[in-house]
Length: 181
Length: 417
Image 1 (spheres, each protein chain N blue to C red):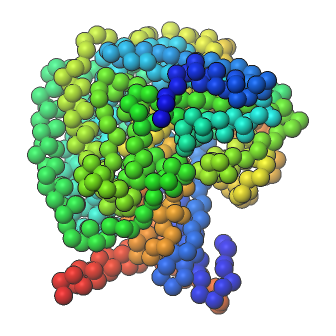
Image 2: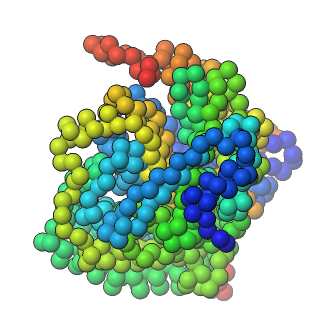
Image 3: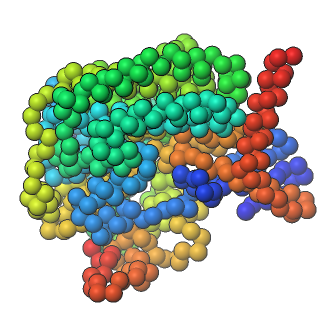
């Protein structure tokens, strides 16, 4: 298998996605005595091309490892980062690849990728219940971590009115309200 | 609980709670006679909202201690991954000596965790003499950890931009002495676990996870490597002192020439990794560069830097059970983290459990489930529901364990006759 450099990977994304490619940044840091480089790559794409981008990552390595989906509440939109790693199995060649996609809060929907990567199911279920992002086409729609009696429409990771504010106890003498960012 | 309406199928929920649990989890097993036909994993019983605390209550330095308490056994790899993520986000480079000390501590943790697992695995199949023996030899590494860090369990060694305690030349002889002890013991452990006919019968071709399934279900750590996936963060990605060493991911074919992906292979991988860990610590002691152990020794200054920093970072470390991932985002002017996402190895390895258990027998559940080394004693209580009469009976941990012991004895009797 041919291993591409981070710059070549960014170029391959540009070619594969065209206008839907938004931005990319490469992070590098020298490590320990031999100064080998730790590298991570962050790619942002439009929501419409999200599944194409995941398929493109599968071209780079047949079974990319999806570590986790992280989600951040940015006020008017929610940012999801799919943390992939590619080129594992090669000594010091592995790359962390964060695939970033932003969703407006008026349309919090993202297609599932469990048909491409079956192991994405847990993290998709967690993103649904914790951030209130609907994963369209998810094969298992149940909650993952939250108990069954947890109220509907409350999302622990959100910083807006759908956050768990009302469920928190403010201890006596403590003014600051949690969850307000 | 879902009850199947077919004539011979039963659903057995296993778990979630037992006083000895390290991490409660519930397994809903659908069984047909003795055979397991379907498995559903239900998690979340001990969700503590640690990420939420990090995003709303604690500052980044306080979070190190919170990260350390994500797991009692891997309390090095979580802060390891966490501080690497924060260092990337804030642009801090830890000194070289600190990178080596981090590796030494992480490998000590691997030795103790794998030995702990080996003991429990022996117990699960009813081989209690091995269980006692392995846990006794584990005490040596626990004493060494206490000698180096000051504590047996939560070690509090990590700081953003370095480590909090040095490992000095005076400590080297005692560390080498313990490592020699494990080297002399390795042959015995290998004979005990790999050549014993009972262990072989209980673990060969039990709980098989094929290479392709492991890749698709994202199995990590010894679970993935035993299925032939050469994925090991220490080999793949330069981090800490590992970047200077030539580490190779351990797969079972190194010893046997083939990859089966069963429980036996998982034993091989963990045993060889204990040996590898000893060698890594020796190399680190030899190559450890001199110098400071912290990039910024003044905590107030460090905290100010972190409050003003803006950025994001990802930290990945190889825990005894597999890859730990921490994602951190810092926002300028904000005291807490703006985003913190933790991925522990059992999170992904649990998705392989249905594949591992399907087609197996109930008596194999304890050892097959334990073989992925989840924070594990979850198979401690089971309710058997008769789908026709809706009768519920409680299958206790003791009964489930006895089923497993009985199977071992039956196999031994068969073998002897």
